[in-house]
Figure (cartoon, rainbow, N blue to C red):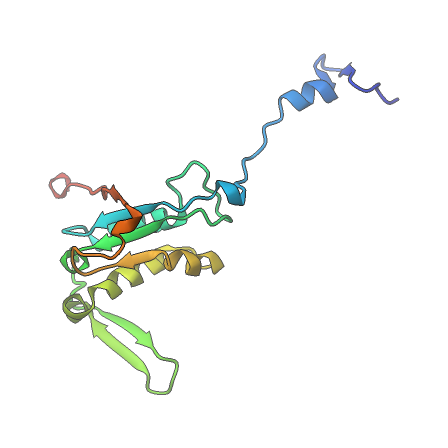
Length: 175
């Protein structure tokens, strides 16, 4: 027995079921369209910020998790500028540890300690930490290209008018 179009049925439990009633109360998941995806610019000051906390929050900005239209499969990330990378705080014994990279050629293994990287190329420390915090998929490569890291205060992206983003830190006195 098929109900007429637009009519409602009553089930054995007494609840109404029918096309009109059910269509009103269906909740649909929001999926962002390409027109909904905007890429904002943020600037982050890394002065005296712990490396891991900075990397985690920058990775969230790059993925766009601060937006209500976030979807893991959509590229809704932001551009992030990190300044003062040479003044970042490394906790524990990270100064003694090494960052490994390989050129892909025989004998191409490079080992650089964090202490010498902090002097010569502090941008590489932050890039490596943020890359580790991003998901391991095709979107991560695109999102990582939106990260700009600079050792000093100066950066060439003043024309984009980036918004200042404050890094949330846990107080050292609370420990």
